[in-house]
Amino acid sequence: MADRLLRLGTRGSALAVAQSGGVAATVIAELGRQVEMITVQTQGDLSSAAISQMGGTGVFVTALREALLRKDVDLAVHSYKDLPTAPAEGLVIAAVPPRQDARDVLVARDGLTLGELPAGARIGTGSPRRTAQLLALGLGHEVVPIRGNVDTRIGKVASGEVDAVVLARAGLARLDRLDEVTETLDPLQVLPAPAQGALAIECRADDGELLELLRALDHPDTRAAVNAERALLAALEAGCTAPVGALAEVAEGDDGDEIFLRGLVAALDGTDVVRLSATGPTSDARGVGSRLAAELLDLGAADLMGVTR
Image (cartoon, rainbow, N blue to C red; front, side, top):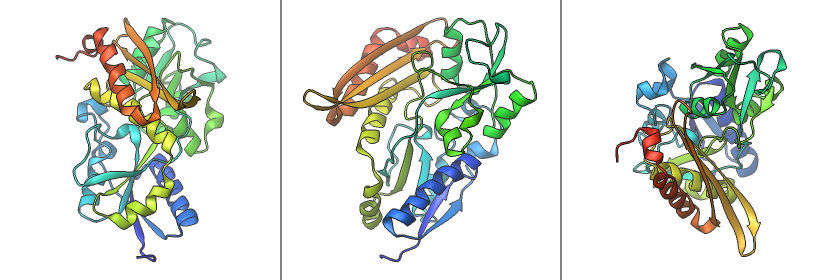
């Protein structure tokens, strides 16, 4: 099995190919295996509709997972934030590589920051989470819905269709386009999506040889942080399009490594926001997330999301 060619499934967008290419290069360099990248079209790639209109969570991953289960590919690379929180039968997250910077960024006309954009400026985003938090800042900006790849979104700024767009810093870093960022947004202003900036390397649960091989690419602190954030999302019964933000960081505590988790739920129109934080040992990352979600729900998070419980 040592000379087995590994078929890596990826979406075809420039960002997905950059992410998957990075993983492939690491597998080749560090694990000594040859990799063939295979492009798989997903529902999210074929439609220009809003993600929430296409069914929300899973639109970018279902086809890749089906290809894994059919054994058309051996492993798949996902943006972790695109994955549904429920486990997929027959599949397992074999590795979570070190995370890129999880924060959101602004790409604005004339090099402006968020605070420098005048009232009435149009800011484009396809994310309810970003929309709600931008409106909650009370700066008088108009937030308009947009979709498309990084080129398309930044192009709307260049053409004057919008004054700025908000994007994930990690995506621009992977595309080597950080020079276009005009401001990296403080998580106190705009909290990122759960698992933003992290990748998930998925394979079949019964592929023991590959599971063992990929374990070397796993970054325990990143996995713990993402587990806490996604546990919060799961306990809120919210999908990846809900106005929910979460960011966990691992730091050394008195009794070993601890996880510090911030969570946020906002009304879509930005009129109300609840924020809380929690800490706990990294060994209980999911528990930290679940408990923080329960506290958010006690403060009315379900009503803000429009969830009937």
